Image 1 (tube, helix red, strand yellow):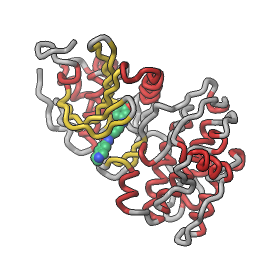
Image 2 (tube, helix red, strand yellow):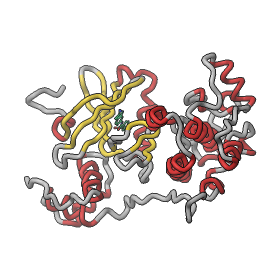
Image 3 (cartoon, helix red, strand yellow):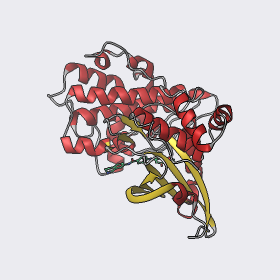
Length: 343
Ligand SMILES: COc1cc(O)cc(Nc2ccc(C(=O)Nc3ccc4c(c3)C[NH2+]CC4)cc2)c1
């Protein structure tokens, strides 16, 4: 039980600020990492509220520990704390000052094709990466896509992620995600493939970006399901033929006829105005830590370089992992030479 005399792991490293998101069993707070001054997002989950959702927390944390890519929200630090008579989790991750893509679309009503293409290419990059790592997100929607300070996409909320044993071929028997973005095969209760379900949700997402409203929408969930299973939607006259064609390739009721993530990478619409296909491999090389950051860490912790390298490569998602990623963030902003206070 933390007290003033025994500061919690959180207050030892972070200064908590306001709540920036809440829902279900979790609350997300803005915080500042004391040593680097970098802003972070801290997701607070209490076992008591979690109830049956405990596996969801573990799934999200395990997934985020395995996912490091420029368009996926980076996990920095996981702190499990015993308080009162139950466990609580605090997970520290990237803060995305642009907030949710959902709010960005609402504020702009709808996006021009060129702007939608910039975001959609980054979303395809994130999904191609997690699929390649054997994960299906299963809850792709604008609320789970955040914008960082350069308006780049960061994918969050891996609580419904599925990493079926033996890769993606396995059917996933659970029904999940948000109804308006759910694929026909998922809501029909048929066995489905997680990666195909993600492609349908991306079709709904692209439609929302280009139109400012949903292709299938009804307050009555049963009526909504019928609309989705019919797969008929309005094609507004402001959509270009290319946009309409890509939407028809994504919003295919038969998952076997749906465009695949690999086909999307160099799809005609995706390539318009671009010289190269979507780049989806990670720019973050966890197996080769950044030498400048290692030097800074070794100096701060007063460790020999090779000892520091070994500690970082353990990827414990403790204070060392957090320091590493946050110093990388500072370096990307040209602020690394700001020396850390020495012990
Ligand atoms: C374990 O998984 C985690 C852990 C964690 O610490 C965070 C997340 N997910 C996030 C949720 C929200 C944000 C975030 O930055 N939200 C945000 C930021 C700025 C603003 C808003 C939200 C909304 N109002 C406008 C300003 C970041 C990560 C997952």
